[in-house]
Length: 312
Image 1 (tube, one colour):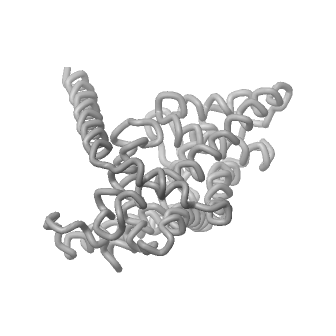
Image 2 (tube, rainbow, N blue to C red; image 1 turned 180 degrees about the horizontal axis):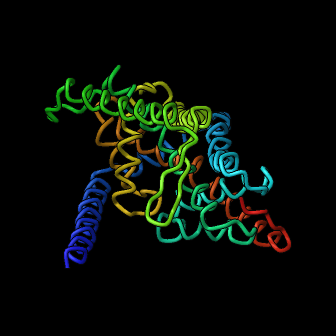
């Protein structure tokens, strides 16, 4: 009964959060001057857009490398190229479609044709998730502790509180690194599952890839804002929007990300240009890579037959 009640509370919290997020998105959409936003979008020339894609390339390469960390750790024999394609495809399906289509079940589906054991697939996917968020914690902590974001007037959030959150995140990252130094290479058991704790070398690769990914994403948005907002102001807002998008359960955080950016950076740049930058960012980092991921998925499906990887 306690478990049932807990599940009910979780679902209720998700519904409430989705309702609040939807209300905020609708309210903000009604306030926007859409002709001005459209004009700001049209103002981007091909050279600026091409540079935005170039800045995003390191992020694309990083997310394609997330599963390579698990390949190294588990020792499975699936080729590095095919593992990278699966990593890229799974990442952008999850990013754009959320848990409904692009969740864990989809990631398992991508690996199943190759004969990997459930344990191996779990470790690869688990390490990929940890890799993605390890650099997030470190960058968010460093930015918040060193240069806390300038929040809109009236928020009444002290700089000390923001620095405290940053220091906590840095300690969290330091704890993960310390565990990998002290216990790296050993195993822990959770019920019937066994997980290997990454060594410090693997952890360093994880953090490096994640920092490259998140840093590049922030750089794309900063570039599209054409110098109106600094990278240090963009990064904490990007971090907040990522969490808000996950909690909202809206695929790709559509609307939620835009509201977070306009609400938190609207005092630093015109809202129309902020929204235009985020919308163009969606094309660069969400839509175009997702189209590539769709083709990659069909390629994986068409070529999976007869390809087996020896389970580790």
